[in-house]
Image 1 (cartoon, rainbow, N blue to C red):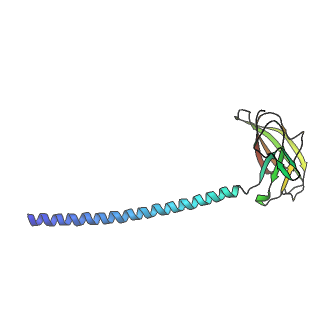
Image 2: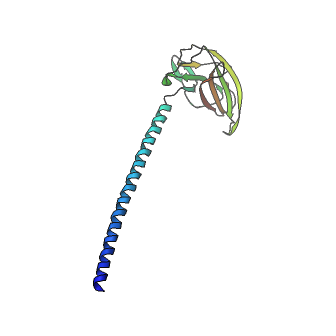
Image 3: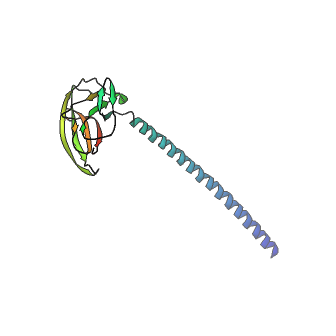
Length: 174
């Protein structure tokens, strides 16, 4: 019986060793797959980061207190009630207005507490421009006046309603 038990223990030891070797090789395969997934995820993250960087190279509609002597004075996303200058910069996207007439459609999208409201178009203001312009500003002390606090959306659009660029501004109480 002693010889049989010794041989049995030997076979069990070999079986356990083979099982461990196979398990370790399987773990290496799984680890390799995990690293490949990680590399793919990193690559996707890089692509997403590139997309984010690309976003900063898109057209912009933004606001300032006034445009004077080639300078944007008081650029911000928040203002107190009053008139504003609307700036349009299409240069980063390599675009132009592409039309001789545009409209600025002004609508209110949030009340003074910052709560979403049903979009309410306040007015549409027409302007004559040059089709090849890629950077311009709009001043109209009567029509580009934001009288009450809230968040406004301004869309620069072609006369047929095709949007060119849009932006938002928050008007806060004085």
